[in-house]
Image (tube, rainbow, N blue to C red):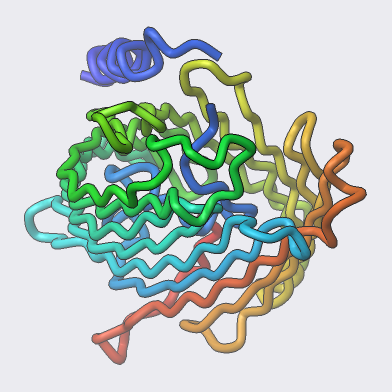
Length: 307
């Protein structure tokens, strides 16, 4: 059974990332390791408890029209049925394009061995896209293509796989299988929301009784753009404080920090700065998140979770 599941995981992963060439359009998060449900529906319920989290991101501070994102997630397992369910809201504005979406996630968990589980997930989504094209400053003032402000309500569906133990995890997903075009006047296509593919992973090392180290990565693939890879390393001290560094290859470096306020409540923030020529025109990117685990059984022992 284990060999069969491993084979299925590899085959579906290759199907998910197959046909993907190397324009990044989906939201980027520095705290991708705490925001996995946004890109992978199979993550739903994997924390073993009801979790609620919120994240805010201000990208390229100082540049007019730079991306601004708010995200809210709630998900929980239904333990008796090996099922996880999730609900998420996302609002993202980048230049003239604003996307607002609501998504529902469903995952089914299969125990592979005594320590690992494989989750298979599906995402259903309603995506509201508004393109305020008339706000753009044009060199050709009479271009009729950009006089309209098209609005699209597009349903979508996504798929994901997520294998996890207490120490490490690995996932592959595509949160939006359907591609959507945005048309201006005369039905001219002015933008297309491309399909994106994600591979995510991480491992927690026990250094001693006080310190743990967690390297993690997120690879993003889409057509007509280079592969984007985020890598991070976080150190945890006594399960209370986390400090880390991140690198988005060819784009930016950053710092992360977090604090476990209570056994159930965690907060974190990050700052990263681009290393391209764009660094001369912005003051960096700031991000913060809040996460709360609900414990309904008073006698339940909370096990620290790092992903």
